[in-house]
Length: 485
Image (cartoon, rainbow, N blue to C red; front, side):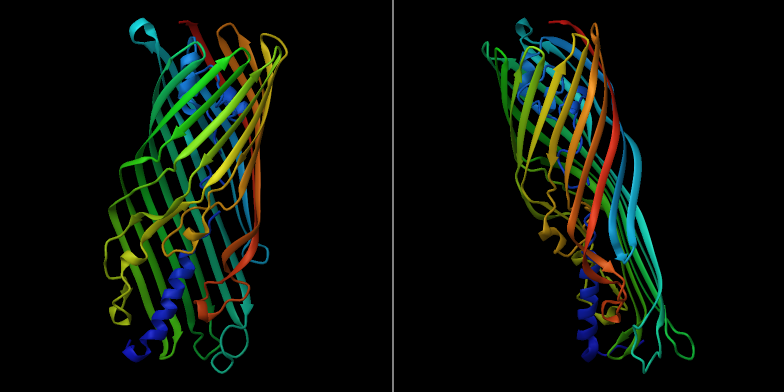
C-alpha cells in the first residue's frame, strides 16, 4: 500500500477524529458517586445521617471524634446488603438499541470493632474494613440494517450494514482504617482516623462495524475499535473529627484531606483496525495498536468536610448530615510510554501511544445531604427510615479530553432506606429494604448508528439519549456489644 505525503493530512485528520470520537467513552451509577454505599447496620438505615454522633464503631468512618463518647466495646459482623441493580442506556446504538445491565451482588458493608487503651483507658481505638465501591456494568447491543452509505457511483443502492458494541466494567474499592479518640471534657471529644484505600478496576469496550459494497466483488469495508485496561492503586486518606454532646443533642464536624497516593500498577491497550477505508487516494487498510504493562498509577480523592446534628427524644431520634466534596482537575490515572502506534508508520509517525493510551479521570465538586429518623416501639424493637442524595461528580471536561474514560455514570442517585432493629441483650439484628433510583434525560451519547457514515469510519454519531438507574436490596446485619468500659 502506498500513501503519498501530500494526501497524508486528510487521512491523519480523520484518524485523529476517529480516536477522539471513540475515546469519548460512555460515562454510564456508582463509579462517580461518593455516597452509594453506607457503613454499618444502623448507620445504613439512618442513611448516613450520623455525623453528629452514633454510639458504635461506625463513627470511625463518619466522625472519629464521636468515638470518645462510646462506653461499650463492640463487634460488627455479617453486615451485608444483597442488592439487584439495573442500568439502561436508551438507544445507545440507535432506535431501540439499548445498553442494559442487570446485576445481583452481596456487598459487605462493615466488619470492625473497638476497644480502649492508654492511661486510665481514656483512649478509644476503633478498626474496620468496608467496601465503599462495588460496581459492575456489562452490556452489549447489535444492529443489522440496510443504509445508503456509499456514493451511488461506487456502490449502487443501500449497503448491508452490521455493527456491534459492548462495555464490561468492574470496579471495586475496599477501605481499611484505624481511628483513635478521646474526650477532652464532659461535652467534647476529638479523634483522628487514617484509611488505606485499595482500588481495582478492569475495563473493556469495543465497537465493530461492517458493510458490503454493491460492486462486482462484494468488497467488505470494516472498522473495529477496542480498548482495555486493568489496574490497582493504593492510597492513604486521613480524617479528623470533633464531636459535641449535651442532654439530647449531639453534633459533629469532620475534615478529610486529599488522599496521598502510595503505589499502583496497571496495563492499558488499544486496537484500531480499518479495512478498505475510503481516502483521497482510494481505499486503504490501516492499523493502530499498542499494549503496555506495569505502568504506574495514581488515583486522587478530594478534600471534603462534613457536619451533622442528631437529636434524641424519648421514643424517637432525628439525624441530619451534610457533606461537601471538592473538585479534582482532569489528570492521568495511568499513561503509556511513547511508542509507535499507527501501522504502516508511513501514514503518520507523529501519532504515538502516549497520546491515546492514557486513562483519564477528574471530578467536579458535589454536595450531599442525608436525613434519618428512628422510632423506638420498645427497648427491643426500633423502626428506621432515611433519605439521602448521592450526586454524581461526573466532569464534562474529562469526557472531552483525549484518553480512555472508564467511568459510566452521569446521573444523580437518590436513596430511600427503611428497616427494623431487634435488640436482645447485647445483640442487635438489623433487617432493612434499600432502594435507589436515578436518571439522566439529557445524556450525550456517542456511537449512534442510525445514520452510519464513512466520514466517521462507520463508528456512529453523537446524540442526546436517556439513561435510567434502579437498585433494590435487602440489608442483613448483626452487631454484638460487650460490657461497658
